[in-house]
Length: 59
Image (cartoon, rainbow, N blue to C red; front, top):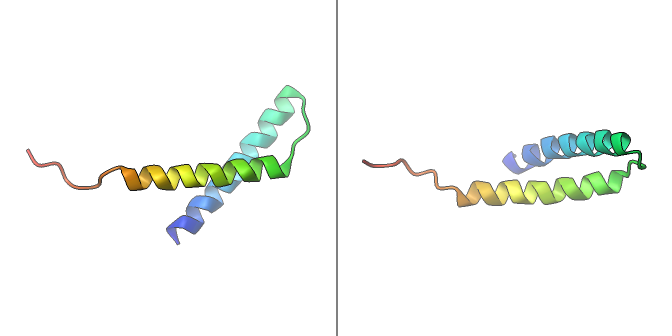
């Protein structure tokens, strides 16, 4: 379920950013570009989450 929600919010946010940026620079918005970037961002987010240790620090 964690992976689904990560992809869901990444998909929405990346497509929103892609739409706004493409509108600002005057190029055509492509849904496929936003979706591809969302998949890549989701994989990177999940990979970084696995690499960060969650063990408590002992002094």
